[in-house]
Amino acid sequence: MFIIRLIILLIVVATLLLLLKRLFSSDPEPEQLKSGEAENMRQCKYCGVHVPESAILVVNDEPYCCQEHADLDQH
Image (tube, rainbow, N blue to C red; front, side, top):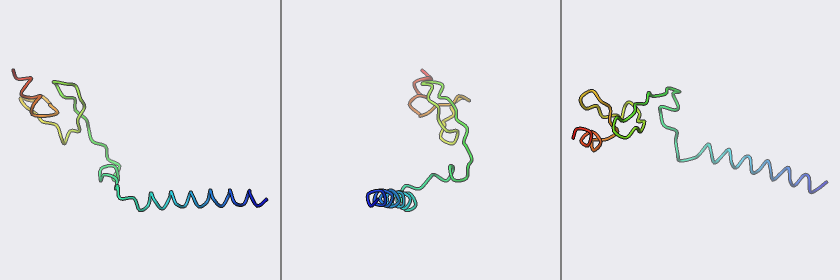
C-alpha cells in the first residue's frame, strides 16, 4: 500500500513541476499565435518555399523569399 501512495505522490509532483515549468518558461508564444490570427503564406516564384505574407519580397509583381532569388530569377 505504501508503494502505491509513493507512486501517486511522485506522479502528482512531476505533473506540478511540468505545469510550473510551462507557466514560467522563458520562451513566450509569438503574438500572432496568442491572438489566434493566422497569416497568409505566399510561395516563392524561384524556389517554391512558402513564406509569410509579411516577409515576402515582391519584385515585378512576383513573390520571392529573398533578394537573392529575385535577382537570380531576373537573369
